[in-house]
Length: 76
Image 1 (spheres, rainbow, N blue to C red):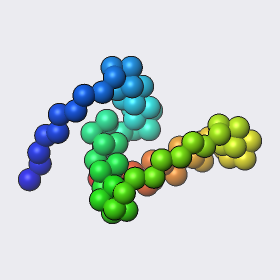
Image 2 (image 1 turned 90 degrees about the vertical axis):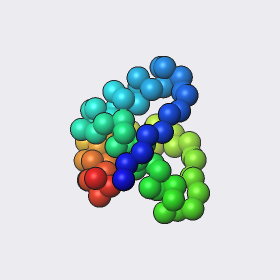
Image 3 (image 1 turned 180 degrees about the vertical axis):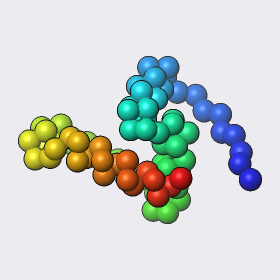
């Protein structure tokens, strides 16, 4: 059975998240559900700051997006 969660967040944050989710072929609900599943599975939340130079210098952005898309498919 599905349920609804109402949250308050900054409008700009929601819009940026929705845009990024769309670019990845996901809905904002998909992203929130995946985050909730990870939270429950990991029994916590991991927050880190990854320098963008590291991703730009050592990784192909398309490979990162492709991997992210594949990982989200597991949660659908």
